[in-house]
Image 1 (cartoon, rainbow over the protein chains, first blue to last red):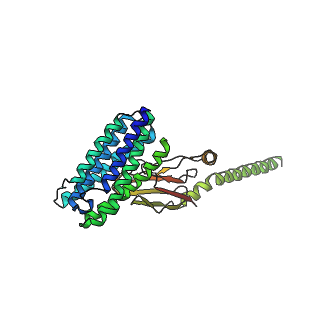
Image 2 (cartoon, rainbow over the protein chains, first blue to last red; image 1 turned 90 degrees about the vertical axis):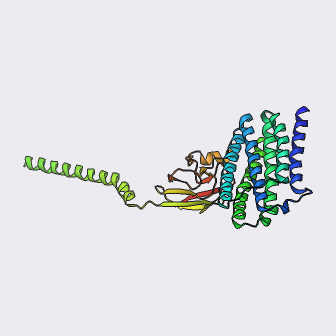
Image 3 (cartoon, rainbow over the protein chains, first blue to last red; image 1 turned 90 degrees about the horizontal axis):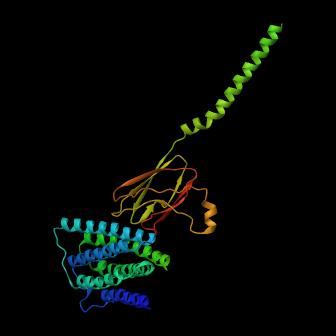
Length: 178
Length: 135
């Protein structure tokens, strides 16, 4: 029963993340390019944090392989983003959405860190699917249409391809660990 | 006369042995000779936008395939192992293979072998799938 409560609480946090992304008093659609870049950088780093937790706690080969891919790919995307910002001589700008994502992630990490074994694997897999679905929706429907700079837009379009592949892999992982 | 008959027998035997040797030699060397003259091709597959291009490639045993990664994350080309009991019997005699990690901007080359598994995917991004077709 205790395990179920923990899982339910964790899922609540994941759903809260999705809601936070779509229903803020301040609108994600009004962010400028540098704020959007900041959100993307934070979102990448959050997923890297989840992955490091999985590599520390999980012994499931499917989960570990996925987590290693998240570390490798999100670091790759961040390196591209930083290189572009350097080229544009621009600094990413902190904003309400970045802070909200970080606050949600803190709660999710606390929940995940309290789980072990198959329970952790299921929770990690479900969070990865929910997180990628939420962030991909935000990138595709809100960020890409609103980005002004052509090079930043191109990077987000390329990034979305990667994150959609992650979403598909997360879906497979969820069915594997159930 | 005896010497001549003996000589003729020896000649026939020597000739027969020589022809047999020639036949065996031809049998043994012909395939090697023909394959040595056959052109082996190096095929190029570009990975871009999480897609292998071409997604199906026609090859001959002895050809090589080079995957070039033009994405900014790493990929692999890895043989698909059987996922069900029925498929196991079909692919049990086929050879598993995988490239090393293909780094962004990097490439990996592999030799095509007769018994290799034909379906492959990226083990980091399992939604990326492609296949090899042997001529």
